[in-house]
Amino acid sequence: MLAASYVGAAWFFSFVALSSSLALWEFYRMAGSKGAKPIVGLGIAAGLFVNLSFYHAKLQSFLLNMFEGLGIAPAFPTQPQLFFVVFVLIVLLVCLIELFRNAGSPLLNIAVTLLGIVYISLFLGTLIGIRERFVPLAFPMLRFFPSESSFMNAASIAEVYSWGGYTVISLFACIWICDTAAYVVGRSMGRHKLFPRVSPNKTWEGAVAGLLAAIGAALAARALLLEYMTFAQAGVFGLAIGVFGQLGDFVESLLKRDAGVKDSSSIVPGHGGVFDRFDSLIFVSPIVYLYLGFVLFS
Image (cartoon, rainbow, N blue to C red; front, side, top):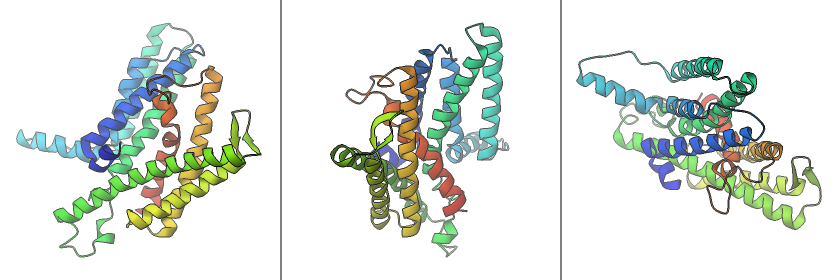
C-alpha cells in the first residue's frame, strides 16, 4: 500500500481499483442477505469506470499521445465532464438492464446497485483524485514555485508528485493511529457508551482519544512530510480524518448489523474483508479530496 501510494500512477490506480472492486463485491453480497439482487457484474465494471474518471490527467496524456501518432487531435473532456458522462451512462444502463431482468424488486435492485457504486467506487475513487491532484495542471505550481523558469522543470514536477504520495501515506497513517488510540483508550478507560445501538463497544473516551491522535499525527506529518501545508491546515486535515473516519466505521457497522454479519467477508485473514479494512477510508477520502480542491488549492 505504501509503495503504491508513493509511486502513484498506474500502480496506485490499480491498488485502489482492485480494493474498491472487492469492497463493492462484499457490499453487494451483504445486500443480497437482505433480499436485494444487485447487478453485480455491471456494478463492478461501472465502478472501475468511475475510478478511471479520477485518473483523468494520465488518461488524457496517454490517449492524446496515442492519437497524435495517428495524426488525430481529438478534444478531451475535463475531469468533471468525464465523470458526469460516465455516471449518466451508468444510471441509464442500470435502469435499462433492470427493465428486462425480472429478478426480485426492481426498485431495491436499482437502489442497491447505484448506492454501492456511489458509496464505494466513487468515494474510494476520490483517493485516486487526491493522488493525481499533485500534477502541474491540477496543482497550483506558481504558489510554491513563483519563478516561471523553475516551476515547470522536471525536479519541481517530481517534488510535487511526491507530495501527493506523502499526502496519501499521511492519510493512511492518521486513520491507523486514530483507530489504534481509540481502541487502546476505549478498552482501558472507556466508561461512557458512544453509540450502543450500532457499535456497543465504542466509547466517548475512545472517540476523543482517536480524534486527538489523528490531529497529532497530522501535525507530525506536516513537520516531516507535508511541507506544502501550514500547521493550521494540517490540523484541519487531522480533524477531518478523526471525525469522518470514525463516522465511516459506524456506518459500516450499521450495514453489517442490518445484514446480520460480523465481517463483510474473510478475504483478509484475521481482519475480515476489504470493506471492513477500508470503512474509515471510504468516508474520509471524499472529504480530504474536497478539502484539497476547495480550500488548500482553490
